[in-house]
Image 1 (cartoon, rainbow, N blue to C red):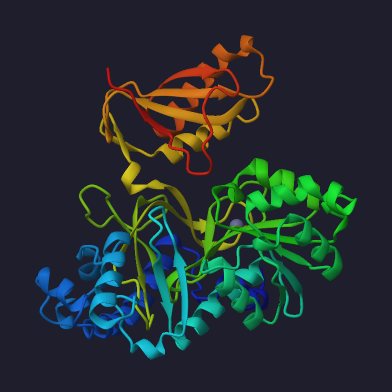
Image 2 (image 1 turned 90 degrees about the vertical axis):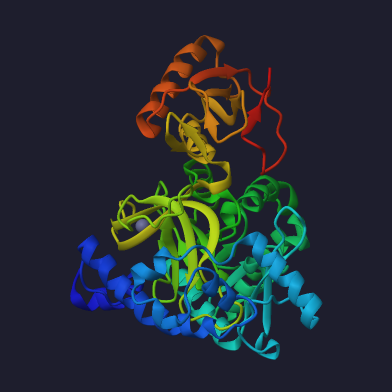
Length: 463
Ligand SMILES: [Zn+2]
């Protein structure tokens, strides 16, 4: 790559020249610490929530935190539960739900997005004008990676709700100079297909399940397959399917489009996969504003060395966020960090893959194992296996009495004569990748109940 193209390369947005992973991380640390020194003083000013968090761990002044290492040794100050409690407390005390951790005047909070979670109570992401502008810039980098150009018509089939991918992404696309057609998932599949036909978008934004529905229903609804619609770019998010090789291959085949899986918008985070056959993790596109992989051991909570291949629970701190920022927010995501050149696209940088949730960690012979990691191995065996699985425990997690018992389902039409060999091959593959050998039983196709996207992978049977 010549110097000129490197300068224009969107992946090189930090302008850190080195391609040595350790030097690269050291340069990022210097950048983070420079911004964090200011941000620590800024959130210290929040007497309702953040200052008490400092005081209770013995920090009596922002100057007590002298280095990034000092900062990383602090415990988490926020998580989903405390976030909700903070919102409820501010509603009682101030009559608004923006949280006691709101670090700006309420009238400066001009945009809200939310996640509803499983309890139905929203947790809000609060944006000031400055927060929004940085968010638009970070998401704009993602749009550039996906090949979207200012002036492009894009089609928005994400739900137009409080969800970040709803209105927030829509506004980011407008700020970028694209022309989003905001029919939204609420419009329904027939209307979405007709409006795509009528508006000729170059890019489609939709969840993987919406993409699948468009593929299946286009011939009936508009009398032609989706491949004739001229869509060149598909950006998905919101469901785990977007990075799975089977989904990516099928979508490419039907649409003839490139496919990108993105995540971001929350507290200046922005990540995206490249359009490779397999997903090699999501490229970080917001290192200068977001410290999303301050990895800790999920049990001891001790900071882990940040290096290529590190796996731990991600603590998220936004480096210059203005309104109700993530500051040592425990995400609960177990993340694997990669540092180096991406095997998919060759671009150098950091990439992340979420391998599980801290709250569903299992301990097998002293090693940490995540159900999502087991699921990923099972998916390597598609279509010979259906992909459905259950981890059957005889006692509550995390400690597993070995061997771990794994029940999986044969693929539709996979002959029963092959099942014993599949059982052996899967056990061996888990041994290779996750360093323990489970006992595997293959069950007939359709024998494991489906209960939607959030099917519990763990079953506890007590005798
Ligand atoms: Zn890549």
